Each structure stands twice: as structure tokens, then as C-alpha cells.
Image (cartoon, rainbow, N blue to C red; front, side, top):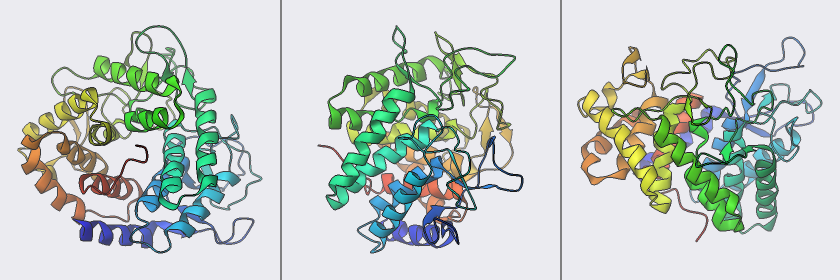
Length: 372
């Protein structure tokens, strides 16, 4: 398994980790991911090279692969310099969700994205533990202060405090739905939140983890366990419109929520969270039944009742569901077949390749917990 991870990483790195050419960031690293969403204020023809979401994945992966890659620290530090060069428009401690291909830091900054900043803060902590660097630890704490101050919606009751989606324009879902308290289940990184709680001793992080699990339970389908891309309102319900800027099937299990099984599997592995285990376990039991215990047969994009909306599969749907197989020994056949699927999937596709590599790191035991 270690050999498979090393090979997959080398192919992922060789294809997707690129350098800016020219300008203020000449030679600095980024993960080639493009952008999916509305970019405001950039000149015509300027497109995104990457997103903070991708930047977070890259920083986590490189920090975890330092035992294999002698360039890991220099790559990580380059990624970190790019992070700092593109602060968000809402909070300079957070990262602009989109980074231009020109590498020009003078272009109008964009709002933050919650998933990107959570992963970046976590990656900075991994780096601090990996290399014993106090600067990375200080950067972790600064990023956490930004997340706490800008990405948390407060309220009363069991589903608060809750993470918002980062962009301050979207405190509610898009018209015609326009319901308040917009949040995204794929941002519910219970393991990250509990890690931050252990690091800081601040109750906000464990409260966010508790509320996230409560929301997941309330919006998951009773038969399949699938959860929607976006959630609104209190009590929480699936959103039909989300932010309306990505053209996704917001009422279903789509390109955002496909990450939920993997995120909850990490919380199961690192903290033994019963709620996370139950959520991931129910999803993988549905997938095993629907696809006859064969991950390679899994398709992509589903309504919450499990009806398939697309006839072909995709690694970014299948690999997170394979990772959920670690939650119970009963899933061993699914996990064994899934490993064969993951190591054979294409690492050159940004989303599927990055998620697959992270799922392989988890399933192989190479994703360690950065707090005691």
C-alpha cells in the first residue's frame, strides 16, 4: 500500500503541481485546478489557475508525504507563500478562493471558501508537527482566528454554531429559495474541528463539530444516508438552490457532498467519533448494496434517495465512498476492491486525483493525527 501511495503521489505531483512563470510569484508552486464559480473584478481573459480548496489539498498532501519526497518542505513553503500573497477580500487572515493564472497579487481579491481555509489551517499544523517549525504553528493560530471570526454563524439551539460558506454575499441561499443560514455539509470536517479544539482549548471548535454532526443527521436521507450539497434554515433542511453559481444539482448528492464519506471517515479514524462513524457507515452500506459490492461499478450524482443522475462513474464520488469502508470490518471486501480502483484511477485529474490520494493516505494509515 505504501508503494502504491508513493507511485500515485509522484504521478499526481508531476502532473498537477505547477509553477507560476513571470511576475511577482515567478517560480512559486500551485496545484493546477482552474476555478468553478463567479470571479468578480478581474480583467476579461484572466482565469483562475487554482482555488483555495485545491491549495488546501496540496498543502495537506505535501506535508503528509514528507517522508517520501525530499522536496516536500520547499514545495510546502512555496505553496504557503502563494497563500499569503492572495488574502481574501473578507478577512486577510484567510485566502482568496480564486488565484489568477497570471499570478498577479494586485488583482481584486475574492471572498474566502470555508473548506479551503479549514484545510489550509490544518495543513499548517501538519507542517508544524512534521518539521517542528514555530512559524507554521503561529500561522495555524492566525488562520484559526480568521476562521472563528469570519466563517462561523452563531445562533441558539443544537445546530449552532455552524460554519457558513465563506462568501459574505451568501448568508442565505439563492433566490427564489432565499432561506437563511446557508452551510455546506462537505465543510463539516469533524476531525479538523476536534484537532483545533485540542490545539487551542477553545470551546468553539468542539461546539462546531457537535452542531455539524447534528445537521448531518437531520438532513441525511433515512434509507441511503446521503446528504445534500447545501443546507439552509433552522431546523436545517436541504437547499434547492445553494449559491446558484456553479450549476450543480443542489438538492442532491453532487460535487460538493460527495466528499462527506471521506471527511467523516477521517474523524472516525483519528478520534473514533460515533456520529461520524454512523454517518459514513450508512452511506457505504447503501453503496455496497446498490453496486453489488463493486466500487468500480459506482456511478456519480444522485438524488438523496439514491437514484442515479449520471450513467458513468467518477473517482471524486467513488474514492470517498471507498474511504468510508474503514469504519467497519464488515466492509473489507468493498475496501479491498476499492484499493485496486483507487490506485488505478487517474491522478492527473485535479479533483478526482487529489481526493483519491487523500483517501489512499487515510486508508493506508499514512495520515497521522497532528495532536495528542
